[in-house]
Amino acid sequence: MLAYLVRFSIRFYGIVITLALLILLYGSYRFINAGLDIFPEFAPKQIIIQTESPGFSAEQVEILISQRIESSISGLMGLQAIRSESIQGLSIVTAIFDEQSDSYRNRQLVTERLSSIATQFPAGVHTPIPVPLSSSWQQY
Picture (tube, rainbow, N blue to C red):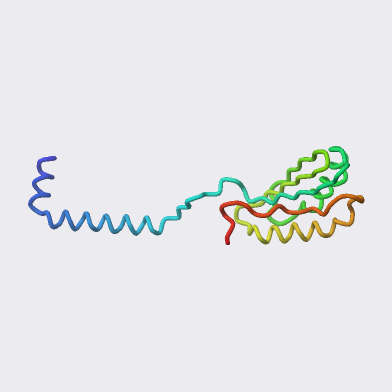
């Protein structure tokens, strides 16, 4: 079988070269149009909201700030989960969205909700700030 293949390749070298070039062209075309990403995004689309509250204990931050932010952004379209971390003087709330959602629209919706509750915080609490985007799916 192998001897037959070698004889065929030597005798009809033009056909073999043509087939090799066709396979090379087809492979190049598929490689160029492949949906590959150099830096794939492994983390979900998320928005992190930080709120500074100097002088507040972790329990006060949780009750007065984190829970209010969580309840205000819950129910947003495409929101999958909300996580929060409250430490002394700082609230960090993470909102995780669907992969198909638009990150800029998500940020706009979260910012609108945050502006509506900014007046409900006690005195001395800074305005909640969404952390700037810093991932590979960000477009410049």
